[in-house]
Amino acid sequence: MSDQSAVGGRDEPATGTDEHAELLSELDSHDLAFALDMVEASDADAFAFDADADPGEVFPQSVASGGPTPTGVICWTRIDPDAFDPETSLAFQIATDDSFDDVVYDGIVTDDERIEAHDYTVKIDLDGRLSPDTEYAYRFVYDDTASRTGYCQTLPRPDDSPDAVRFAVLTCQNYLNGYFPALHYVAEEDVDFIVHLGDFIYESDDGHFKGLGSYDYPGRELSLPSGYDRVRTLRDYRYLHRTYRTDEFLQEALESHTLIAGWDDHEMVNDIYWDHRTDAPAGDHPRGDDPEFMSELVADAMHAWWEYMPARVDYDPTGESLQDRFELWRKLEFGDLLSLAMTDERLFRDPPREAIPTVDNVGPHREPPGRTMLGEKQRDWLIETLTTDDRLWTVWADEVLTMPFRLGSGPLSVYPVQGGWDGYTRERQRISEAVADADVDNYITLTGDMHCYIAGYKQTSYPGRVSGGTGVAQGERIGVEFMTPATTSLNAAEALHLTRGWRGTLTEPLLSKLVTGMNPHIEFFDSHNWGYSVVEFTREDCTYVSYAVDKTVDSPDADREVVGAYRVPEGVVNLEDVTDQYQA
Image (cartoon, rainbow, N blue to C red; front, top):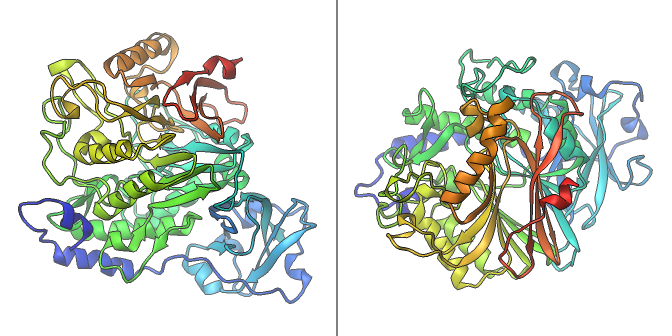
C-alpha cells in the first residue's frame, strides 16, 4: 500500500495492487541516467579543440548545471547522435576562470554505452570536489569541439553568513505559446541560482494548452515521434526535452546560472494525481483512466526528466511504492541566511474535487477528511522543516497557489483554482496552524502554476467559509507569498482575448482591482503579462521584482518592464510597494 492509500481516509481500500506492481515494474525496467564516472586523461590532447568549431554541431542542447551543494554541482550536456563515436572520449573541465587557466578538476568519460543508452545525455557529479560559495566555469570537449562555456555556483557552508542570495524564479514555459526572450534577460541577471517551479515542458504538440486568445508563433512547430498529439512514449518525452533545449534563450539561461529544479504536472500529464482506486497515477490524457498505460507513461516521463535535468533528487530503487522511490522534496541551505524547501505536489495529491468549487463546499468544514496534496510523509517533513529551521529566512518553493483565490462575494463566490490549495484546505490549514504555533519569522512562499503575478499575505484564516465557517475574521498574518508569472503559457487574459490593444489597456487595471477587492489578503495581481521574477534575500529584507517580457518577439531586444516590486522587512510581515524604485 502506498503512502497515499495509508492517509487517504477512504471508505474502501485501494484495489489496484496489480496496477501498483505494474508501475514499479515499469520503473524497474528503466535504467535511470545517473551521473557518470570520469577517469584521468592520459594526455592533454583530450582537452584540445578547434577554436573555430561550431559548438552547436556537437552539443546541440549546450550545457547546464544544477543540484548545488557546498562542495559541488551536477554538470550536464548532450552529444549530437550524428557526431557520436564510441571510440571517442568525452572530456570535461571546470575552472575558477573562464579562460581555464586555473582548472580545478578534469577528466574523461569513457562509458559510451551509457551515453548512448540515455539519449546521448551526460551528467557529471562534482559533489566533494569544489569549494563552497564559489562560481566556476566549465566546458565539455568532444571530437575537437568545445561546448559553450557554462557557469555554475556552489552553496555556502551551512554555518556561513552570506550577505545576500538572489534567485531568478521561473515557471510554465510552453514552447508552442510564445518565444523565450524572458530567459535571455534571466541569463543577464546578476542572480545566484535559477529556481524553476515546474512545467519546464508541455506534453503536447498541437497547442492543446493554448486558448482562443493565443496566436501562432512561426518556428514553434512540434511533431511527436509517436504520431499522436499527446505524449505516448519515452521517445515523445525525450523529443520534447530535446526540442525545448534547442531554444537559444533557454540555453543562455542554463549556461549562465545553476538550476534548482522542481516539477509540476506538464512534465508528466496535465492535472496528474494519484488514483487510490487503482493505486496508480491518473490525469488529463486521452488514456488517463487506464492505470496500466498511465503507470508506464509516468515511468517514461520520469526517465526523460532524469536524463535532461541536472537535479539532485534522492532515488531509492528498493522503495515499495513510487512515492518511496522518488523524493523530489528536499531542503537546500544557504548558510545561516535562508533555507529553501522544495515540494512535490503532483505524485501524492488526491483526485481533484468539483470543476468549480463554490463557497459552500471549499472550506475545511465541507471537505472530505483525509484529503492530501503532499502525502503524510512529505507533509510531516515540510512542517518540521518550516517550524524548526533556525535560519533568518524560511522559504517554501511551492508549485501551486497556497492562498485562497475567490471570485465573487459572499454566497455568490467561487474558488476556481482547482489545482491549488483551495482543493486541499484541511491540509493547508494544518500547515498554516503549525507555522503560526511555532511563531516562524520571515516565512516566504515562492509559487507558480497559475500564470499570473501575485503578492499577498499567508494567514491563519481568511474571511468566508474557505476558512471554516461564515463570519470568520481575517486571521493572523504568518508570511508572504510571491507568485512568478508564466514564461509563455496561457493566462486568464489571453484566454479571453484581452491581452492586446485597447482591450489589455482597459482590462488590466480593472481585473487587478477586482481580484484584490475580492481577496483582501492579496495586495498585487496581474494576469495580462508574461516573464519572470527576481527574489533577493538579505539581512535586512526580502525583495520581489516581477518583470514582463514580450513573448511575441523572438529577439534579445524584446520589450521588458517591471510590473510590480515589493519589499518585506526582516522581522515584519508587511508588503511595501517599491515598484516606483525599480521602474525609474
